Image (cartoon, rainbow, N blue to C red; front, side, top):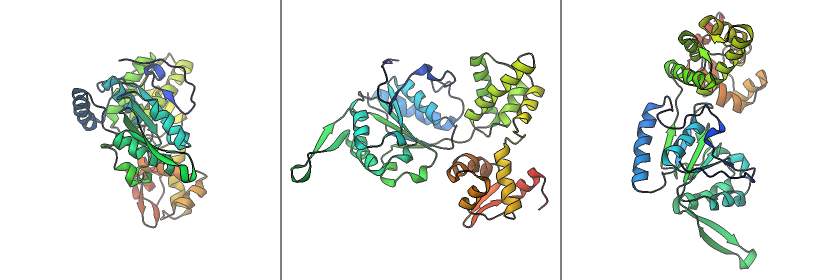
Length: 332
C-alpha cells in the first residue's frame, strides 16, 4: 500500500497512518465481527478495483465504539489508497471543505466522522462534489458574482455517525452504501480481546477473556478499554497473568456488573424506577435528574439498555421494564 508521509499543517485534517493505533485491524480478514457487512464490502471493493474506479460513497452508522472508524481505515487499506480524516464540527466554512476536497488525489478516501454535525452551507457544497466531482464556487460579489464549477479528483466519501436521523435526506440519498454496524456477540468480543492481548503482550486465560467480553456492552472499544484496566490490576496486584478470578474482581472494582452495566447505567434505571415510578419520563427530565447530557443518554446509554431489554421508549417517554426491576433487586 502506498502511504504518503506528510507534515500535518491543517488542524482540520488528519492524514491516515496505519500505525496510529496498533489495535486497529488493517484488513477485512483482521476485522472481527460484522460478517454480513464484510462479505458485501468484499464484493464492492473488488468491483471498484476491477473498474479502476473509486468505491461508491459509504455512510456508516451505529452506536459509539462499534468500529466505524476502524472500518474506514480497513477500506483504505483494501483499496490501496490514501485516506484523510476530519470531523463534521471541524469543518466550519465551505472554504474549509473546498480546501480538503481540492487536495484529494484520484480514488482517495475522505473520512468525515460525526458527519451529522456538518452545518447546512458546508453540506450543500458536498452535493455536487459527491455526484459530479465538481465544486460550485461563487466568484465575486453582487452583480458581478459568477458561479463556477471547479473539477476535483474522483474520491470516496465515508461518513460516520451515531445519529443517522439527524442527517438530512438530500445528503443521505447521495451515499451509494448505507451500512449499519450492530452490537457484537460475546464470542466475537472474546476474539477481539485475545487479538488485542496478543498485540499488547498481555497474558490472559480463556475464561478471563470471556468474563471481560460479556461485560463489554457488545462494543469492541469498551472491551479493549476494560482489557487494559484489568491488565493494570494484574501487573500491580498479581503475577501479570489475567485469570477468571482476577478479571471478575477487577471489573467489580470498576463497578461493572455481570450484564455489563456500569454505575451510570444503574443510576439511570434507578432514577426512572424510584423517582418517576418506572416511567414514562421524558428525555429532558431524565437528563436533568441524573445530571447528564441528553445526547449522551441517547447515544451511549440507551442503545445498549434497550437492546438488553432494560428500558423501552414510548411516545410519552422512557419506561423501565420488569427486567430492570429484577436486575436492581427492586420490587415493582
